[in-house]
Length: 166
Image (cartoon, one colour):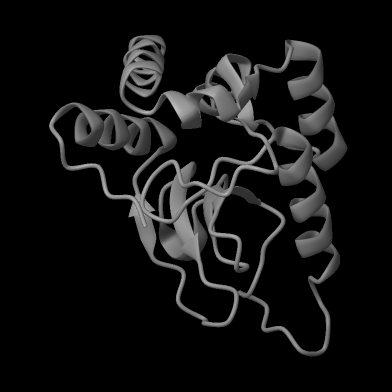
């Protein structure tokens, strides 16, 4: 299912958003993904690995959104953001639920907010759900049940003409 969704995503972006498509970087290797996982002692969902093998996010100089106001960062930016956020755990000014090690920042809006892969299932939720992380608000709503659900919603919205870009 995920490989088919990625083929449809690739085709739609190439045809309908060629400038954005040109800003997408070549995919990473299995070795890069393994090093990322080892760095944080975690295992990413297969859909995440397949997506980043397809494309390593958009160029950092590209400030266009993939969906709504969410940009698609390269794996090295995800690693940098995760290391920074993990380093803030336990600080005096953040509550215990502000950030968790089991969260991996995925998409971002450039203003500190992120769509997060929740590997553990925050607050009784399902492992691998996607949460919206508002950097200055305590709410951590479940936005998608999984990365696959997000990808399916993204591709469907592209193909049926309801894709939102901010």
